[in-house]
Length: 227
Image (cartoon, rainbow, N blue to C red; front, side):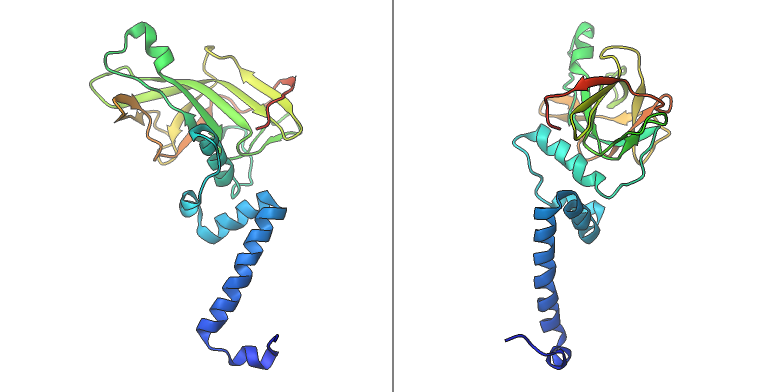
């Protein structure tokens, strides 16, 4: 039986809470099913950005989960930038104090996905969270200290329609660098020892800062990969 308005008003607080919670649960489920992006925003709003990582992140492996994490974190960020992007690493360096100097570059490779939108000032295009990949190298010069720096040489983005854009060249000159979100003016990055290698901690939040504002990102054609 559906209660009347008068009966609903006479309900005590716990009953009201249960009633409202039921419809919130239904609303969240429908939002995720019908509107995946809107569902992410609703979850971020309800849980708070600092708790969104407590939600189960979909993905078949750590790379997919980290990229999906970037998309979920970016759901609450709507202002695109031409100069920087909050980023989530999905491939981290695996360095060692015994690594020969000639192998430092390969051991220090890092890849990140944007967790905030990017735009080009001279193009009518916005790269949503999770649509761009940044490739770079972590430099660990002083092996006596767990501190390093990371340069970015390539940015590759794919839109929902498959249009592929690329800026920079792999192994080319830097187009940007990586900093901590909490200290954006300091290029030094903390390193940790994990599984007998030295790498970047996943617990930190990172920002990719570009050396110059994005003015035009070359269109490279269509991509067969679904990002």
